[in-house]
Length: 283
Image 1: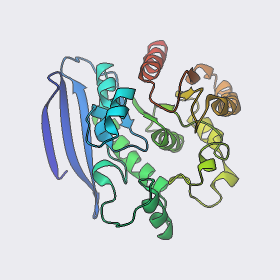
Image 2: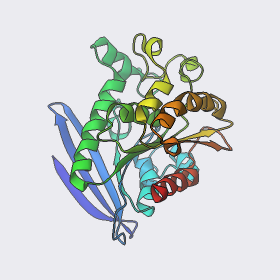
Image 3: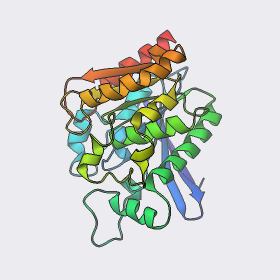
């Protein structure tokens, strides 16, 4: 840990900020948020933002021109998690927020496309690098708090949460994701580039239903808007139907849930936290 700060946030939360060195040339800002009045923490919520301006949106903070719209839509995942009795973990993924690209004179429109392609040229991938970081963060906080750990996030954050959950069953106890469920070729790949799925022959060997099946029997809650222009609910239904067979084999059909939201590609905080709290209450 290179630096540490702790202070009262909005008069009712404790906010802690760490600058952590993960490798020789890799430093990452990580923040936690808990409610001062919370006597017993229910669990850990790793809150991730999608292709947005940065993790400050988890705290409802406005730093970029587009941020007011995001905050109004419900971006404040860390605050929501703390309000629901969890300790929230927030950090900037590679290429976002405090870790965004600042040295390239001519950047791609998509924030992390340059980093993704540069990673591939070096024999790595942005997806792999991101999942590796998330695993390290989750492993540390799971050990520190000794509580169940979930990952929550929308859009590209949800996609990465799904991969991380599929790979690390001993660390990730559940996920709740939105705006990211559907067949790759019928959804995100239609856009031409994703900055995370540019891996040779990725969709030749597996699709998203494989990742969801690897979550079984752990809880996997999915939210999809019926008017989502990238990941519509109709596509999520296909993945859900392909995945529920495995959950049934585990006798855990209630652990896989698809929620239909009435709306576009955005946040659905009430649906998210109602579904998480309901699952935890009944299991």
